[in-house]
Each structure stands twice: as structure tokens, then as C-alpha cells.
Length: 380
Image 1: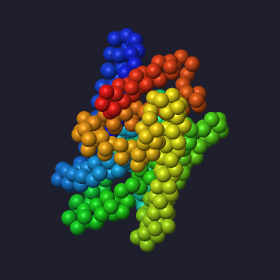
Image 2: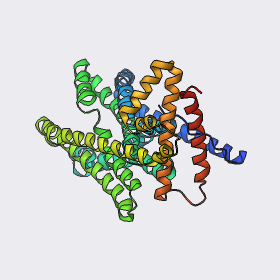
Image 3: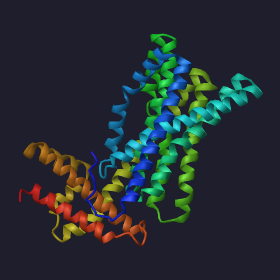
Image 4: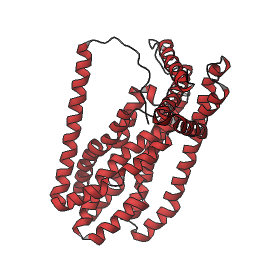
């Protein structure tokens, strides 16, 4: 669960706030319109009944996938509005342009070299490039625009997975709708393949871009900061191309072989990367909060709990058992703000902030909020 950072009053004119609100509303309406256009195009191809069946089937497992992705972000949960933006970017905007460009390139190549060549080109060449670039664009926007909410590999994987899950949901509406036209057996088969055997294919591909951006954020090397995100995006496109190619060009045997020899090992490697990234985040928390332990702001037990996932889970459970939901929420907020303070200090140490960023005011606000929570948790 994500909690807001301590409020810091920044004087902005009502005119600027109104402009931002209007821009946000306009952007939301445009995204909604593009999403409705995609559904309209799918409905034209499949018909209303198959569209409805595809919509229901595609959305049912999504909440479970989202919960699994958000569980990864154990130290510093990302803002809900950014997670939602990434998801709906993938579901509404990226899918619209992917549908448009993939269809256009497929038809163009089909007219020149035949229908089968057009379909193969669209799946193996066009789709990986267009879809991975479209899903990743929101990651690059967050990376440059919200530096205080994009700290490393874990954040990159979470944002990438949210964008990819949104994309996969809308794409599955099309696939399930088409399958529904062939009857219940066809729909069941496609649902099992896409929903159970390969539900994380899109998140896996896009997470490679997220990892590249996360490594760039963590590094102070200029070469790494410039080229690693590009390498991550190229790897995402390459993996996506291999996956689509195995299904389109090689038949069922090559598809299964690719799944076993490529996708399963890649997924296991991703789990290792996530584990190492979480270990680094724990190290950041311990390193940048040790000064508060030394000056007596945190007790040794509080500091130890904040620096490990098991410690945080244990402290949250104890707070719930002793003080109910109110105590659990206070402990969760305490854990969240302590992490935000640690990562704020880490960003300051790496020189992420510009010279006009009032880092001392931000730190003071975090410490004040943490002190109030400590008083509540300690029963003062």
C-alpha cells in the first residue's frame, strides 16, 4: 500500500494549478477515447457477444497479477496515481498505436509479398518494436519527470509490469474475442495458454527496459546512464521477437521448445534480479538510516526491522495483533516514510536533485512525520 509523503507547502499560483488540472483531464479523456476506439475496432472484427466474452475473460485475472507485481515493491511503494497511469497507458494508449501501426505494416507488406509474409512481418518485426517502444515510453517519462519516484531496478520492474499488464489485458480482449468465435473449447484453450502459461510474457519483456532505466538511475557513470536503457529496450524487443517468432514461424513444437529453453530460464533470472534489487534497497535503507539510529531517533529493534523485508512484515503483524487496523496502518505508514527518507538521502548523495531543490526542508518534513508516528506507535 502506498502512502503519501509528508506535506510540504509549495506556493504555486491558482492559475498554474488550474492549467495542470485541465491538462490532466484532457489527457485522461484522450486516453479513454483511444481505448474506446480500440474496443470498437475489436468489436467490429469479433462482434458484440465475442467482444463481451473477451473483455470479461481478459479482465478476470488482472487483479491477481497486479497484486503479485505490487508485492515486489516491499521497501518504498510507488504512488497509486503513477501505478494507475502506467497501467492505463499500456491498456489504452500503447495498444491503440500498436494496433494501428502493426495493422498498417502488416497490410503494406502483405500487398507487396503476400498475406502470410505480412502477418509474419507484423508479428515478428513490427509488433516487438512498436509494442515495446509504446509500453516503455511511460517509463522514460517517469524516469525524467519523476526522479523522486524512480530510484532503481525494483521501481523500473514495477512500472514496466504495470504498463505491460495493461497492454496484455487489452490485447487479450482481442485474442479471447477471436477465440470465442470458434466456440467455448477454443476460448478455453487460448485462455489457458495466455492466462496461465504465459501471463507474464509482456511484463517480462518490458521489465528489461525497466531494469535498464533502474541501473541508469543507480549509476553515476555517464556511459551507463546513456546506453544501458537503450540496451534494455533492445533486449525487450529481441525477446519479444523470439517469442512471437516461435509461435508464428515454427509451429507448436518450436513454441514449446522456446517456452522451456528461453521463457522459463528468463523468468527465473528475473526472479534472481528482483531478489538482488530488493537486497540493494534494504542496504540503502540501512545505510541512510543508520545516522538516526546513532542519534537515538530509532531504537535498535526499529532500525533492524526497517532494514529487512521479514522485519517489516513481522512489525506490521505485531502492530495489527496489538492495536488492530489502526496500529497496522500506522506501522505501514512508518515503514513507508522511513524508506522514502532513506531514498531521499540516497538521491541527494548521488546528486539527482537540482540546486534549487530544498533537500533540508524535505528531510525535516519526513523526520517530523516519523516522530509523530513513533509517538503513536510507542504509545506516548
